Length: 332
Image 1: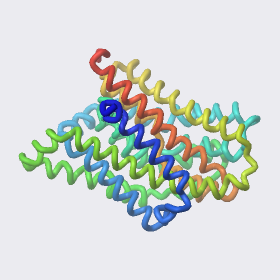
Image 2: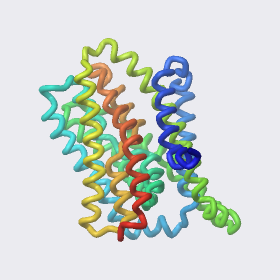
Image 3: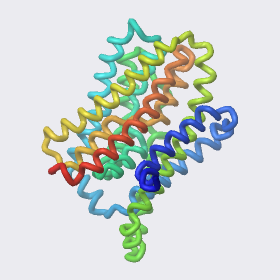
Image 4: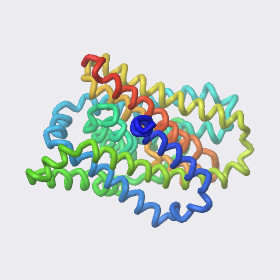
């Protein structure tokens, strides 16, 4: 029994956190406070990326810059193939799916890769997490231009909630600064040796940080769902189709990223990073667009983004553990 919980602690904790967040959203709504929630969430993201970068040698980052192929491929999947595939799914489902939910599929598809969880899952699976971090930087820096262009093309709506200056500042504070601080600390030999020795513990800490982010996100999403679902006019059939579509898109792109990376003869660690970072989407940017730019005309557009976020965490937990188990059996 103890071994069962040790191996599956994250999945169990994930289910518990999601259950608490969605069912107790009203009681925990103080966590969704715009000011408090934002700074708590950003502090957690910065802490997670610090713990991810701390055990990595500076060589891992310079190697990624010298061989940017995996990061470029993952970014192409995330910002190219995935939106195109989702657009095709949108047209196929439009006659059967609530229009707000269909629009929400496109909003989720056009957002950048997640800020932290792709790197966490890549490391959990035994992949090259420095590639996932680079994809985070590439796609989030480019989202102020690429995301509005995709959404204008697919929905005809001009997105105004993304701003270049704000995005750069956010990335500097949440990604670059904690990673740089981690590398500066590693320059001290004793601290560097400690971080390398405790890589697994730091990974557990990063996963715990992701769980805290999920709690905040699920509370926010639960409050949003309670407010919109009552007046939506959407049926259970609509919600079932939407959930199946979102999970299908994510799983398909996870597979496409891995297959393309194999076709380009990339190493196994890089293939894992391409799969996860190419198929994951960030909740923070997606919620901002769905609420600020589509909230009035399509109030349910926020739900596919929430579903994508929750679904990728559940699916990728299973996938990461499966990949980790097969690492010794699969050749590079």
